[in-house]
Length: 355
Ligand code: SF4
Image (cartoon, rainbow, N blue to C red; front, top):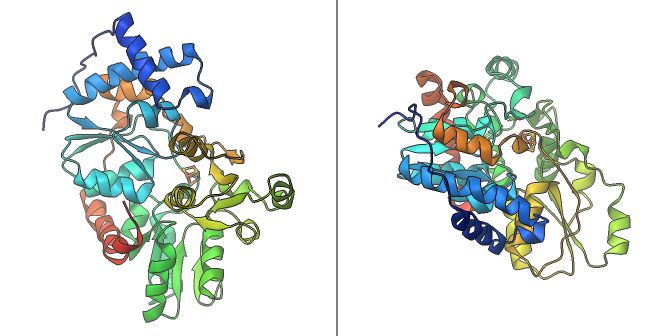
């Protein structure tokens, strides 16, 4: 594979190019999300350049659903949750992956595609869950609970994945954990404590005895609470309230659906309600508003600083002049060990998640 290291600038767009590109972005629904004409022109200049360079560099741009709307609608080749992006990166023939998301996602892409160059435009984009636990912590837990399999949420580093038996996502965790409980009396679930509590309740398992949890939290979802739900149900009669499974058990117990971002989008697509409230990162609400322009969404979201770290300028830089800190490397030995529990997830959950 050719190295991406040499700087290769995009040509400059003409006024006409920018106007046409801004029109394309407007047609994708960005105007409805509050982008002004100036915003659209500023984005258009960058998306035009990125889309030219992307082809020239034989790169693909996967983007998580929490990314900014101008990324999702302007330059992304595919959009999805962690699971879907991991799967589609694996199937892509591109030579380079410019990952619009956070570090653990880009690492997962690298583990599954060791021969491809994987770049994270915002190298500082981490995740509070991923950073809550190390490989050493997992080894200690295993020693304390011998024989208990380790089911690890995908929001973890390559090092932690390498110490795990199976990886799970918010969408397939109930199914995979149920299967593990068929063969084991006790399992270790890492690192999201709130999701673990929700799973324990759904599967009727005792925390501390049958399911061992870690203390990780998502800084976005841990801050939603149930106190205003009754109020919203009164002022928006018939509203369907959907919450991410990283939210607290108190909140999860009073909503209409709990699940991952893919579950939430499918629910909106398949149901007919006067209003929807998506309790998660704001990017999903924006995506839902552009995908389902005839449906009404009640705002209730928070921004993830890690997800917002990527912008069009950083994507262009990753293509034109990638910094060493943006290049994702996973040591071979860790990557090989981390790949096994990811493949175990594919094997155990493939029929549970629709791409
Ligand atoms: S929303 Fe939460 S889980 Fe997702 S990247 Fe941000 S901190 Fe991590």
